[in-house]
Length: 208
Ligand SMILES: [Zn+2]
Image 1 (cartoon, rainbow, N blue to C red):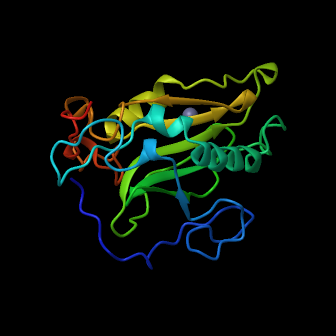
Image 2: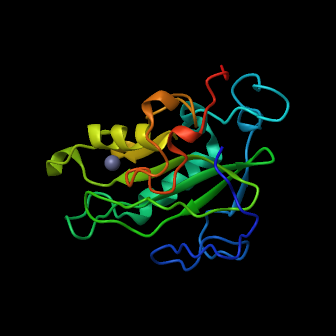
């Protein structure tokens, strides 16, 4: 398990146009703490390994959750989908589980076909369970909206599921089923690719 400090005040992630989005005084319409339905409760998606190690929610559970969907749709709109390259740009961030709730944190905006989601912010007492980003180009623009092999390889290495929202506001889940579900396919946390994610240090193979 990755060590998660209790310090929240060091979080400095900002959103492109709506100011700081972490904290309870955000200006956008993505709440800092989103209370979700029971299917995302910890332990989620099956029985816990034991009473002290709850199972993280799966990417499929997260992509179906209405409040996660709302946060991704906000990121989608912020990425100016369908506009020309250089205006449209990827947006993204991270999903955390804490006390049966999902916390959404947004990262800095990316480029037309790229975003850097390394070094996810540490949020006290919360477990990083997924990351997400937008694919804002349309098929008619010659842009593939679908999850690509690079996306999959990165999330497999990092050890948490990824979510992509793309044309039609379709949401795709990819990578490991849930945080730690394929530790043998993840990389060592010291790998540059892992970039602050748990990598193979997370293990939830007992979760079903
Ligand atoms: Zn992508």
